[in-house]
Image (cartoon, rainbow, N blue to C red; front, side):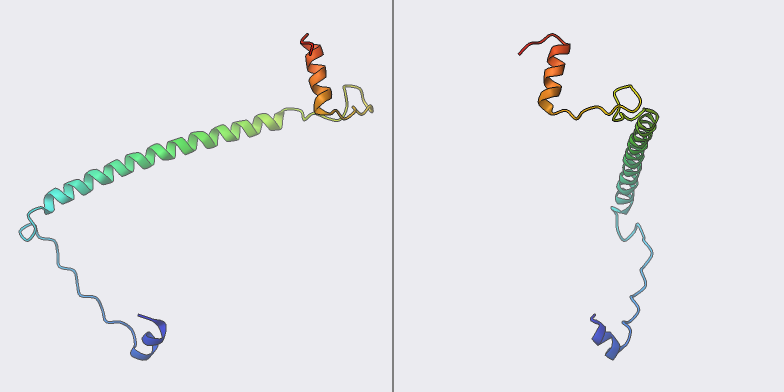
Length: 105
């Protein structure tokens, strides 16, 4: 019901009361309830499994963050105080690595 109509007519009537479930009226009611209970148990187990996986991954992230915070960040010095290391291009770094590991081009 739209807002304008609700203002003109008033609130909607109360919904009819729900009749209690009676297995005599629905012979499959007990089977349906059993199926529903089984589905709820499966959903609960799946949720607990997912929750455990999320908790494990969050714990790993927290440990990784702590390890990164403990590590000394690479500074602009080359080990000597006050000396600033020159900026390197990727080509320079590749040549240094090849020279260090004995892999000539």
